Amino acid sequence: MLPIPIKKFIELFSELPSIGPRQATRLAFHLIASGKNTIQEIERSLSDIKNLKNCEQCFFIATAPSNLCFFCADSKRRKDLIAIVEKPTDLLSLEKTRTFNGQYFILGDLAKAGVLETAQRLRIKNLASRMEKEFPDKNAEIIIAISPTTFGDFTAQLITQEFKPLVKKITRLGRGIPTGGEIEFADEETLRNALERRN
Image (tube, rainbow, N blue to C red; front, top):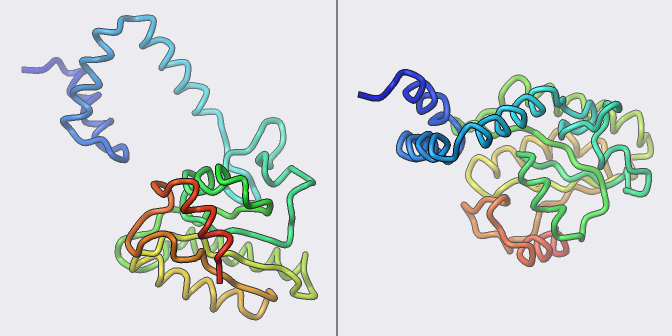
């Protein structure tokens, strides 16, 4: 019934976060109605995104021509204060509070099976090695800024075990965020309070 290009579009876009088949179908017809100019702009935007890379230090988006992102390259930000977050959108949510002036570290989406992926374990090991080199006196703080879900709590325990011998202080966001809630969807005031009341 539907032309093959629309079927392919729906199939691909249905796999994106928060977009199911119904929403993908609406998007397809909206784009068709918007005309070729809009579709070409989106094509250019996707092409530009394709050329981006991850920061070699925190795994956010690096700013060309550097291999570091805006946050890691900023000499005014504290190097001894690192917030470990799950997703880039969590980083952006915390940054909107204008409360945090340290570095970030993106762990990657947590699996719903309660285990860390191999890539996530490697990221943690790499950060631990970096902390050992940069802070031999252990004079640094890790903030575990992961959503307070069952899997988030499990991951927080693993991170705590890994970094306890390496840093002076390990804290978690204060419980202004409801249990089971996600950082990405918390408002700025709630996140600000969670940062200030970390323990």
